[in-house]
Image (cartoon, rainbow over all chains, first blue to last red; front, top):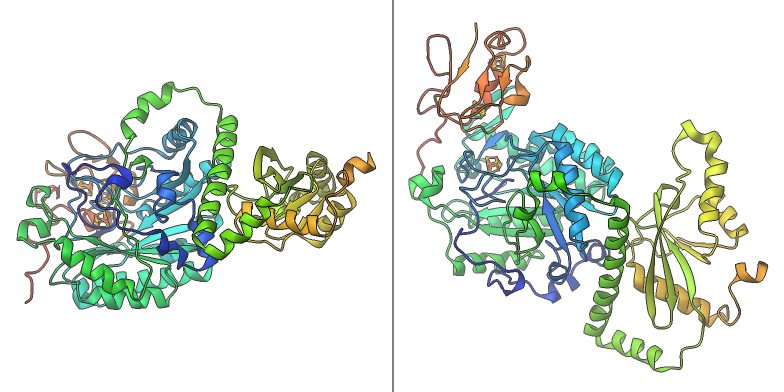
Length: 498
Length: 81
Ligand code: SF4
Ligand code: SF4
Ligand code: SF4
């Protein structure tokens, strides 16, 4: 949603081949390890991932509650979409249907975002209804949203409730005098507020929202539109402040102000930055912050791998006609993701020479030790990020000296459903245990003491010590430890019992 | 007593969910106000909500055809410096 006009409509774009891709693999290595794991299969954040994973935006949020001088609302929010092409605005139900159809056709789909065409949080019912439908029917997809930040503090709890793990806030300034040159007005408390006062409110809401999201562990990326002569010098300060507050990426994007788009800046002759000016500012901000450089300023209804747009294959009409096996599609996505992540983990390991050697040594040795089947509580299959009691399904993997193989997913009988079904808890846990009976290890982010005991009694060893780690390397480490302690010489415990 | 949306509306949806009486109708070529439902917000808010968020000057008018956001009212002030 909130940013400047977009890609030049005539510019050829094609994923990595695009000259716009300036990010390096090093970049993500510099991020905190926990953040790296969370963004590694996010096409918009990881330069590596954007070659393997796909994202889509659904245009459910048409309305906006502020005015930016680089936006003409006759078209989509110019940040995410190509001026002159108005997105097909979807209802939440249509958006859910379209997402399921796309995610069935493109198994690389890992992220669903709401980026407008207006502001996701100026359309809260439509935005959260879409998230509700998808967390129900495609819980493996990561959810993200973009906002101008005006309504952010009010919705942070709701955002956390839906496990949205990436939020993008467009922050162009932290000085209201600069803001007054970018935002002519906002809609606030049922009235229109103009001038400096408008920017004061907007800026304080953005900063408060940023702090609240970070406090809840939600990843925050900040987008800024570089407007020469207005905020270009100031953005270094913005970068420093948002980083200090915990934003994990700062994405500086160029103002695009072609007069044909009819924006205020376009009509008043405000120019955008040159490539050199943009790069210089990105470099200066990078001293303070991890910078994102392969941003493609996608449309609010973009579909597919970054840099490609397969939106035309999934118009409402076509989607309506599609027959989809949602469950099978989810299985395909999860398996593909596990395979890609294993490959990426290997590549990352290879980049760190010492690690690479260790791995090579393990590989070279004649592989002793049998395969171990493990259940993993993970929302995406990539990171061990789920509490045992909250898992709606488990990824089943088989680990050997050679690596990790995905065997599919199994539904959990989710016993931790709140007090209402407490009486049922015993039964449900027993059903979950039965469905995991062939597993020796259960990897999760956390687990209560009660179910811990029951799992152990059933011959499944719970392991919460790899919380928030990538699945493949963590599983491999667990396997290695079992090997070294001599547990892998005999048949699995449950087979011995049987 | 009712407001009216006239040509120039860009169908941006901003006003639709704000109307306390669901008086705004999605329509082509531009959105419309149901005159039987619109109260000009006098019963609910200090100012008509649709006019307080509409980004386009001159497209929401009262019974006399006077725009609630007259020309110049929404444009940014002239650049300083
Ligand atoms: S925040 Fe609103 S006004 Fe600003 S660019 Fe996005 S849609 Fe346009
Ligand atoms: S004036 Fe108020 S009641 Fe009438 S259409 Fe606008 S928002 Fe609805
Ligand atoms: S806010 Fe104004 S431009 Fe947008 S739909 Fe309503 S009347 Fe039309």
